[in-house]
Length: 300
Image 1 (tube, rainbow, N blue to C red):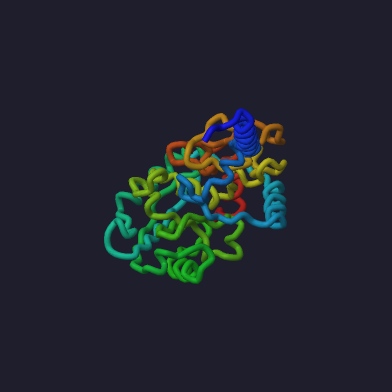
Image 2 (image 1 turned 45 degrees about the vertical axis):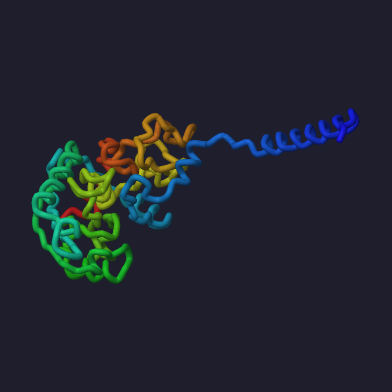
């Protein structure tokens, strides 16, 4: 069949119309620029880290604790002048290291890691005792569970100055020093056994998860506790931080530009969420806060 010039023009116009329509739709759905802060905040919990489950106190308790701390007249104690006895409570689900039965050599290494991290502070740690318990429920205990209450009440050494250190498979968390008056039975830190030195955790197996949790036990908050607010983490020399550092070590990041405590995010701080290879320091004011908190709540 012979095609007329008129028909060709009609086909061309129809083709051009649909081509323009497709182009308009594709332009209207152009991807928006990625905001690094938003992307970081949407990362799944625990990505590349062993997530800390320590719960922050409410504002009323924070104010009361800070008021007591501000009223304390306390000069920082000498380096390594405060010896902290560590009572390890190893919870495991079956015989063998893969099931949480942590050996003595690993516990010794964890003490070494604590002492290296807290060098330059008033604190020094020594292994005081070790007990091991084969109990699947206790091994899998989670925070605020009946198993936590039962395991800690049975195994814990009921002295506020002793660091009860529980290893298991249910997560990482700590109590705060001001909790001892009401919940001495629950006092201590809990760490996933795979985060201890030489453990199977891919990015946190150098023992710094314990350093982080002991920081809470001595009264520190996360560096991102107050986000970009004036209170921040109640420590004056840690810049405000909106979002926790996670799997990588984003040195040079600033998630709170113009905040009351300005500066680049303290991603290498032990109280952030970086990997063990990233975290390596406490600030001077964090050390002063831990020392004062210990003197106020844990000193024998």
